[in-house]
Image 1 (cartoon, rainbow, N blue to C red):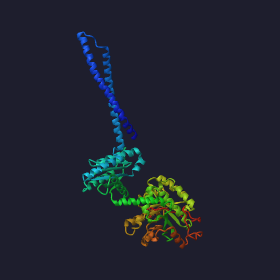
Image 2: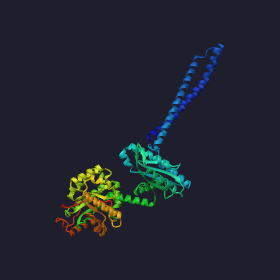
Image 3: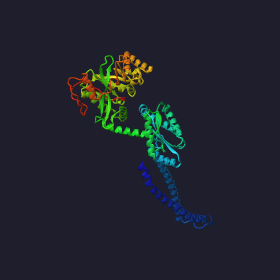
Image 4: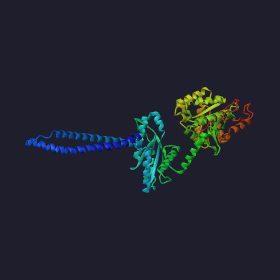
Length: 554
């Protein structure tokens, strides 16, 4: 496009030169026509009416040539005029393509910055404030993946029309790419409610069904708002603030709007620091396995451990997994993190007593990896950890993205002897269809129900129903979040087979877990001394149990 505009500019001097030459010829031809034509005309009139001498033949020829020049000049002028018109239209189209989104007709990102700078300055002159909104459609990628880009484009056009309708008469509207939109307008700084009403209207409308290509589509949006009179020195800082607010709205649950405030920026800086640190922490084995005890309720004996992830940061100390696990998922680092944790846990636990199992929680993001089963089996082989002592925990919500792929992964793991547990049962759809679709070996009740079992009749009813369901399907039930003896006794009476929680102790590091097992004589004879974990996450060969992983709730 830039090269095309450059060619147009280079051609302009040539066009102007051609216009001058053509104009000079036309003027000369007209003057000659006037001079020669009058002479030939007067002589011809005398010849016909008074019998004088005929017109000079050379003058007649000159007159005809002159007429021809005039006709040529006129045609050339018309051609040049059409050419100039075509070029002007081409330049207009080029400028339009350079400044507008071709799909919606909204401004593009560059034009938003340019036009927004003008509006930003106008707001200061008029003692107004400029509101800038960043709007991102929630789960738009799913629409594209399920129905194709033609449907996605039609949906974007419908969304653009709704945004344009919601804006005040003088407003900027832009599509920044993909499913992200922006709009800006002026408002009275003392009446921010005007801005909020527009934001509420947009969020409400985006949550309503859209018709696109004969389909009824459901989406929502996350919307961030920033205002120019609050610590924004330029249109660029205003756009950045609105973008941060939009990210905060998305993080808070989507389908809502949020005003920017400085705490959001500090939170974003912390997140970026954690992300950068995470990229180095995984290969440097700063993220290590911790082990939460799992107790057999019938006998009171230690039955195994669930593997959790803990980041032992050299400066911050222990970082809460609720902070870094979501970042790992969003950035695609969750696979590497999980592999590292599992390798370390398998190596640390393989000389534990063979009666002890390890439970590993698998992130929904990992279930999108068709090679997940092969990666886990490879880790088991390399570390020498028995597959029959590993239990992989899968949350029900992760099955909705691709049930067929989940069935394939689970089938491969089951063929190697790995057990499968349905985690956090009761918090999602709790569909019996999923219990039939996958060969689960265990159901785990979410701790939110367990912890309130003695205070909430509803929680007690749900826990009891899940226990009866597990009994009828011959699936043992594990309860998470046991915090005191009263809850433990209630769960034992209900019929849960296994329990875990802080009532049995806080999660243990590798060394603390070994000390506990040594005290209970649950280490194999080959391991009288604590193991030293290598940089590759492997321990000296002995032979024993394992398992690990990170857990979203830690």
